[in-house]
Length: 286
Length: 286
Image 1 (tube, rainbow over the protein chains, first blue to last red):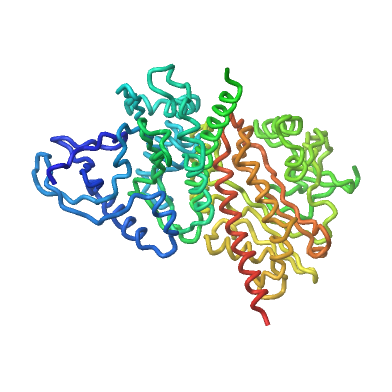
Image 2 (image 1 turned 135 degrees about the horizontal axis):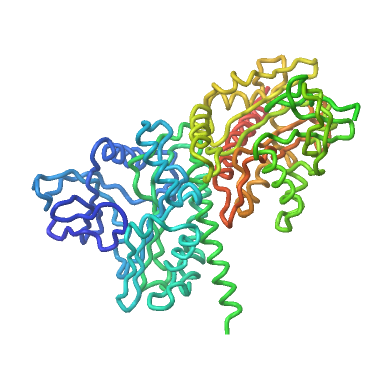
């Protein structure tokens, strides 16, 4: 366990430090997520346990869009208490990426489960209205863009909180732009968002499942996008689209997750618009 | 104007009477909706005016899914004031139906526009959580089922308010069941919900438009379903799927209406399940 370290690619949530618990990764491609306090940690663990064994989840969906679940482990912590602390052990979905470009996008206009207690509802509702969640059906919780030369764009969380619709559009453009230029040249849009294995194709596959699945409602979950700035044009491309953060997942009880699906469709439209623009620019270029 | 009368098929909203304004219909197939108080009426009128002339709305969508707009007219009222009152003049979307079976389904988990004032948000949110809106992405605001023999099922609004997921499923079954039987035989499911011109096919066409359109956000609007119990099996069938109630429509500002779309997808799943069940029952029947 000597190789445990905070992931370089983390863009949202608490970071591990001497005083704080935070996720860790190792060289074997595993991701260790500290069990969250209260019932959140138990809730997330219960979801992973149920989901990873659920006979009605198509294996293709589980493999393509969810981190593989490897149980729990007690990990000695660097935090002040020094006590071993339980962690959920997951596949590190960004393992093997040399220069990670990551976006954490929280999906859904509403981030609270319908049966949540009143103060929690009020807190989430206020945040959903302050951010773009209510208006766009999603909000960007974190982003990291890295270019060949080592330049990294990693905006502060406070900076992301205040952005509006135009800001989200700009951010989703910048995520597929080469660092160092004007920041929104969308040079990588076709390679990352477009094509057979690109983000758009993967999101559409996920959407088709959400139109049918009535097993789970993914309140407050995120879609994590990842690609390797050093290997964008490699075959397969290594573009990753994964769901993460399941502390507020509810049972579906025979109803589709219209809240997640609506937000997903909105994100798809934003990304499809960028792909279409980039394709127009390419065909009308010099 | 001597033939003006309250529509027999009205299932939601205020009914016209000596003391109240309410919608009226005439023999020419027109529907007169009293301009709502406050800015709601003006807002709805502004929507109809903008929508009916908007170059980016596909004519097929306008014709298939929206009542045709015929301006406004001052109508002498039977109400106590006796003053002529302005009405929005629309196509009577249920004209020509001899024995109307109607369902008014308010679409969207959230019925308030994001910029609505606080007390209105609180009132809507409470109602969205008390009814099935938050959980299912839609709620049934009214229903009328009429059978050949003259039997009519027209539940009270208070009865509809309290229903849960199972109740909605039962109601959507009963809507396509012959009156007089056990109420949920789904004898008309294939004819009304299924087939090329059926409700499901029409809802899916509407969904495809909502995946793309970023012109309007239809907060608190309803989908009205209608068919003629006397002519279910007639060619074309006369099954109608229309959007109504536009007092809270917002501009889309380049973003899809993920709230309406999510609820629409949820309704589609409910109806697709009933069509699939009915088709299984038919093929395994005696």
